[in-house]
Length: 573
Ligand code: GDP
Image (spheres, rainbow, N blue to C red):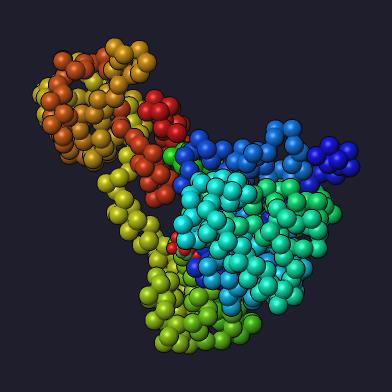
């Protein structure tokens, strides 16, 4: 170790990227669980973070799980383990996936020896020149094995009977021979003194954890010595795409493993796709919340920048949002697009095509279904729509509009959008709560308890039939300064001359508040509140979202200001 420090040049190393390979049932998933500490107590999971398609183990976590002395240097900041068995896209792109790995753990079932897929993995590793360690797994299956949970393997072996030791020995010898037949020299790591040439075998039990500390230690201590150059941290970004998704709220997201360098918000990146290179700007960088923060707001943690090696979700900013246009000739297509772009119409175009509308066009245009429903439309001018395209569109909810003049095409589209908006308003009307504050006029309370009937002055916002109303009262418990008392919903409303109305933005109106729950029904004017209390519409996170989503056109700037003030009072994040 002293030598380590002496010879250690100052080169900064990044976290090695590790994947797990092996025959089916050899224990890849179980070993991964064991390494990730999926089942361990939060307290013991020290710093392990679940990432996009990977798990990050800080070096300190590995040190804590082994008998390694505090002063012993670990040159890498941690270890990034790719969730190979779980990650489907990894197996689909094995070979590309492998090329991003610095090291592999090949899991071999000690009771079965080398199997077909083990040998296949070995060929792949050799082809990609990836170093590996053999995890000789399921040692606890040796007959008579005495369990020594999470113990280093040498210690665990010492505790075994002579019978177990001899079974272990002959099975190990058999595996070493099998490897030799496949062209690899291997040795148990604790007897291996040619670590650069002879592949290490780390006996493990993914069931009771024997040997797992040794395996982790090999990955962070032995590996950096043999591939120091490869692990040198470098600012040049090197990244592998795991998958691309259309996310309802986030738009296009790209799950990547960042092998080297730093990614920052605002960086421009180019992604190779089947349709050619796509240039995009990084809008946000996300990783899942650590386990203990799962209840935190939103599913992801946001980062201004991330440093290799990490698994991260890139929220891409592609400006392409709009409708799909299909026409019979280039001339008409140009005319339509020009018309759509004109300031009086102003409808963005996402993509276009010539000739009949086929299934592929519907598929392409459907990208908008998840992004912006109002753009999930094909405007088809003077072209045939193939039956299977119509069927797919109907099934997925994409609208195909055909017409014989450009003018009619745009008109039908505009009507369609209106219809969509109205339908959405109807669907969410019950959940929308417009903001208002009302002043109770004293001496003009006609019924003090369910239903409460009184005259009020609209102080701010807009009051509507259906709006839930509450009052704030100071709490006796000082830690909670105010309490919200729901009174019920406004069930009807009248002007001073007795006309029924449904909404009011100013003036004096008579309102009737009907309670829903027994609690609401029990609240009465004079006992629980009086004319010194303001009546306030009871908003929530959800009701604000509904307003934003469907009722923007009915909200004025001052209404949003009121919402933002009420948010603080209701303690809405
Ligand atoms: P995979 O197909 O390689 O991912 O294998 P799994 O991790 O799913 O394991 C296959 C089976 O072997 C499961 O029933 C595991 O519980 C079991 N298994 C895996 N590792 C061990 C081990 O070290 N000891 C014992 N006793 N069982 C194991």
